[in-house]
Image (cartoon, rainbow, N blue to C red):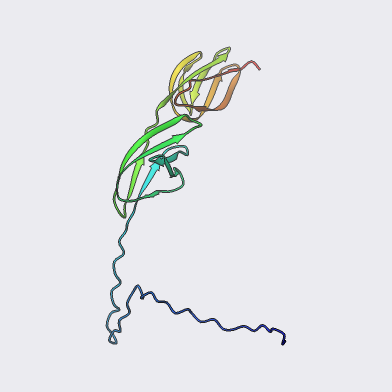
Length: 178
């Protein structure tokens, strides 16, 4: 029995039984090339602006997340649900998508409830905006990550980052004497 030997055989493209998708036509010298068929655009996009990541679902199926670029959708009217568990946030949007176009949507955030206290007392700022002097109860603040600043003339400033949620009231406090 002779030993098997290996040798490379040049490969040739396999013959295709499928027709060429773009038929070739021979053009006369100097004539413009044949026109390519128009490609139909079969989707549009929804660009959703929310200041934090939100999961986007349609009919119970996750289709993407905000903040990662526009979401591709077939043309037509779509009902989308946005949610974020950290902020207890959920809302529904209806959007009309046109083929080849981007529809931009901005989400209005609901307010959460914030109560703030300090010992001995302090002026309180949320994201740089004064909301009053402690004690403060049930102050409406937009849902999301917020910076709290307590300011006292004798004890200085104290800062804290908090998450304001849509459903659960948030309570924060500090002892500026420490």
